Structures are given as C-alpha cells and as structure tokens.
Image (cartoon, rainbow, N blue to C red; front, top):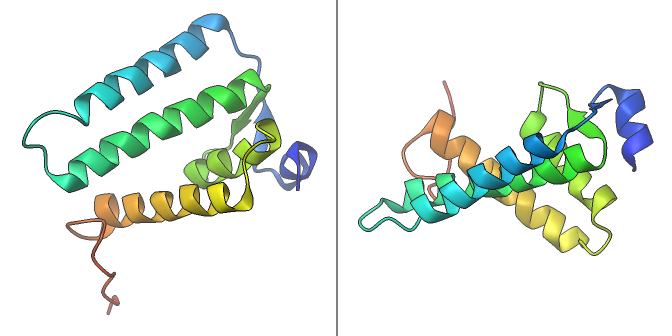
Length: 122
C-alpha cells in the first residue's frame, strides 16, 4: 500500500498544510505528554492522553506529507499512513499503533479500562 492507493480508495485527501498547523499539532502533543504524567492520574487516562499525543504527531507527519485522513476511520488511516511517510517504521510498529488505537477505542467508547477484555454486546 501507499498514499496513492489510499487516495484512490477515498481514505485520504490531499492537504495543503501551513507551518502554524504543524506547530499547533506539536504543541498539542507536548501538552498531552505533560498531562499524562500528572500525579494520581488513572492508568486509563494516562493511556488515552498519551495516545492523543501520538495521534497528534502522526497527524502532523501526514499533514507535512501533504495529506489528511478522511473523517471515517480517521485514527486508523492516520496511523496506517505513518509507514508511507516514515520508512524506518516496521510492521511491528504498525501493529503496536493499531493495538493502541483499539485499546483506546474500547476505553473511550465501550467500557471502563482499556486493558479489560471487551464483553459481547447483546
């Protein structure tokens, strides 16, 4: 896969970025990295805030490459595209990012605690 395949699939769109956009995303990541270290913060919140920092950085990389993920599955597409922009990333890195994305989704949308197994819905 590559950027062109994602464009043709409608998962990405071309994006004209500006330095202030990249600076804003980096500032969000810095803020979140500082906030995830706050004393007595629940592990779930530490994880969620850390994830948000990583997503902001991935979004900055994608924007600097001239792209933006479409709204549907935005987190997934953003992290998947890191491998196109950062050649040093391995399949193992991609699997790690995806596992974090899934755990964060469970934590935010499904139940308390990202590290508990998901219960089947009825």
